[in-house]
Image (cartoon, rainbow, N blue to C red):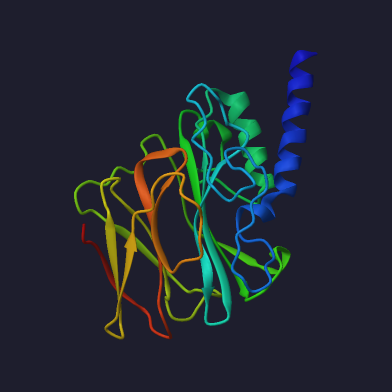
Length: 245
């Protein structure tokens, strides 16, 4: 009976979280570029990221969500977030986590057997975009990257992984760059084909989220790397990126 009760609670929690998925990217604005977050686990309604959950708090059935950046550019509202799902301890947890991910429209990077999730952390990088002033439900969301691994990425020194993306749509110039850098990185320079450069500086942990075209942030559930976002200042495309500090 206890097992049935716990399973029912998990399903209700998944439904509540899936219903709130809109809040993890950008909510409707009135052209002010304001980010709106609901009280999802690990976040609060003030727009200031909450402190990481205690190590003893298991989050197998709910992701830890970090809004890395958001802003407006050329009449486009955009945002990038990272979801991290903790490693299940056994097959029962892995099955429930697979179902929870499906509620979010996510598929883990495994061959398809839930047991492949045991002992492995999954993360998903998601971008969102729409016309400036769009309501949240009007925004389109597309995956940038995902992985399921027993060893989180741990870049060192000036290591950098950059993933250029269109700011909108599936095609078009790569005006958005999302990537991973060492936790020691203080600044990333994103170079564009028109010769311009955008500098992304490290945001202090728990600092308020503000509209920006470049930033480096820590991500809940991923202590071994930080993530950065750059958006081109105009109609140009990605050339290269480097850690400069």
